[in-house]
Every structure is written in C-alpha cells, then in structure tokens.
Length: 243
Ligand code: PGA
Image (cartoon, rainbow, N blue to C red; front, side, top):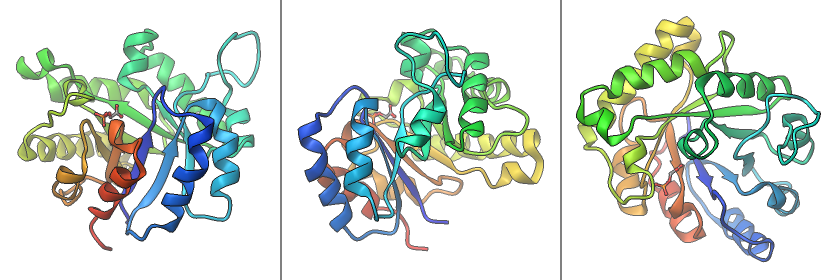
C-alpha cells in the first residue's frame, strides 16, 4: 500500500494561500497518497483547487450529531458535501483544549463513518506517561475506547511530547509502538485490524521522514508544522518508500 501523508494545518493558513499550495502539490511527483486537512473555511476553496487531482481533503474535527443546536460545531455530512473525504478525530490538541474523551471520539468516529468520511483517529501518550513506562497501555486504552466495534479507517500514533517540539521518539520506540498498536488492533478487530493503516505523527520533517516511513507497520505520516510549506510537505512525501 502507498504511504499516506496527511497534512494537518491546525489553525493556520489563509484563503489567499490555497491556490498556490494546491498547484504545488498537483505538480509534484511522489509515491504517496496525499491528504490536506486545512481549517474548515478553506475546505471549499481547496476542493475547487484540487478537483480532478488524486489529492484528498480532510477536516480536523466533526460533531457526533448529524445536525442540531451545537453552536460553533460542524457536522460530518456537511463536511462530506463540501468535498472532505477524511476527518482527523481525537487529536491530542482537541483532547486537551476541548476536553474530548475517548467516548466523545467514538461518537464522532461513528458519525464520520455514517457520513461516508474516513476517520483518522489520533492516540498517543504524554511525556510523563512514557517516562513511567505506561505508553503502550495508555494507547491501548485509547484505541479500545475511541474506536467503535465496527471501526474502519486510519489510526495515527502521535506521542504528545513529540508534537511541535522537534523531538521524535527513537526509531526503535516508533517500531515498538507501531507493532504494539498493530497487535492491539488485531486483538480488537481480528483480520480487519491487520489492515488499518497506522500513521506516525509528531515532528515529522523532510530530514527524518524517509527513515520513519520505511519502518514496519508505519503506513504513513500525520504532519503538522511541516505541512504548511508545500516544499517541506512534498519533501516528506518524497521520502515514502516506492511500492
Ligand atoms: P507536528 O504536528 O508535525 O507539528 O509535530 C503533528 C500533529 O499534531 O499532527
């Protein structure tokens, strides 16, 4: 399977920047499947700019309900209607900033699936949890409670202490965590769990991407800061192994 390289713009970007960014991505050559996840208001402009290309669009959150009195939230069917194919759910910044629980995330995952969106569900430990030797158990609990029984989609392992810090786990630790997540997914979902792509996220940059993307059970990368510049995002995609 081709590596999935998803760019999480977080709360960055402007309407004026969309056309140039999309043009750069469309012109590039690489072995990866690209997904761009900009802020909600940029999705329609991106959908127009990427029309006819293989580059997919994702949102950064959705609500668990299809519609209703939820001021400031966005429903999954609307995201699908305006051209998103994916949605990031349970990012650690949403878990921290908005108090999202595993149960909240499971509800959003179900809503995303019902709307035809592919969820990218984030899990990962804090630095103190890692230091205490609890990383694998924390992630196992997040998987067990954030993914509904009929889950299909993508999982992203993002150690919280590696996000936006320029620090990444040792290669051996990424390998061990991804092997553990694969075992957890297989225990949870049987054969289907063996096919769920597991992305790595947290300070993926052009200079470390190829080494990370080559690891067993690393199905791609969820890229924050380095996805904002098309040259960096494409350099990361260029690190994807050929298939
Ligand atoms: P980063 O963010 O690449 O800036 O570390 C990754 C993420 O939060 O998805």
